[in-house]
Length: 84
Image (tube, rainbow, N blue to C red; front, side, top):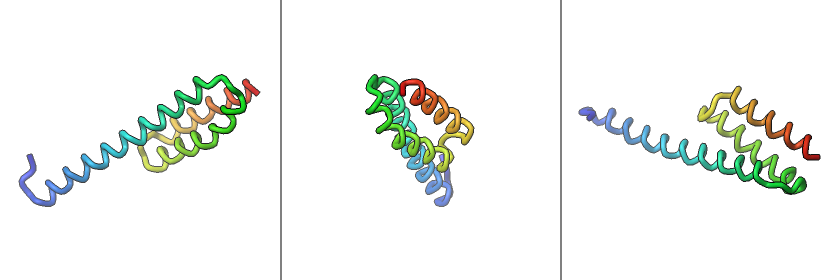
């Protein structure tokens, strides 16, 4: 365990950031899962921009790599065009 007060604070901050990042990542994964599970084409096209925005935010915050975000968005857009 840390002995210096600044190091103790850094440990607290890192735990807080880790929890926040896990929340955002899990929420986005659930949104992607729900989007893929939806069979309705109209609902898919309505939810797609929101999910793509969530993915962009994850990449911006550094929670996922920008290439992973691009791959996820590409797969979702491909499915959207296939269902249309």
